[in-house]
Image (cartoon, rainbow, N blue to C red; front, side, top):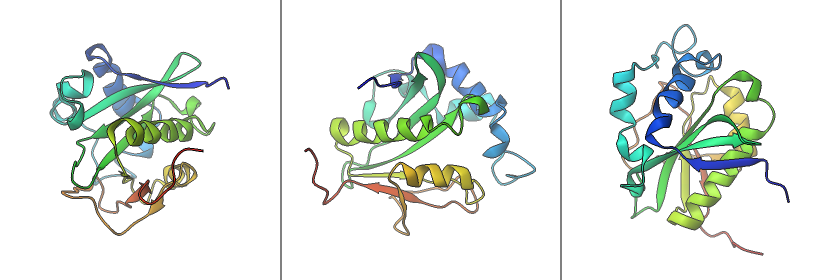
Length: 180
């Protein structure tokens, strides 16, 4: 099968680009900043750098979190990342954003989430993967559900929501038969 979506680990040289996709894209208004998201301001470079520290862009501490570039047929279309892995719960939270609206609505983000979750499960042993968009981001919620997530009231350990109306979704690999 010809896989058109590919994930590659982000390097330090990708940090500014990823920041710009988050803060200066025509999709930014769909997830951050007024008027729709006054409770989730668009981060400054300093805010972003405080959240996405060096280990997100190198392999120094993979259990603390990592960013990946999403490519569609070798064109960079966005980023996906996981945060610190809870080794007791075997869980992590992920986040994703696309670089531009021309990449949205084609199923590429959904496929990237599926690939990424399988990677986290198979490579890092994650049995529970969370994502927590705003309830106002109905398009994203619909996409995450297509990628195999479902709503949960069981919050991850040390969960701090990004939005006043965050909805927590989980992809649970526990008690599932893997393989064949």
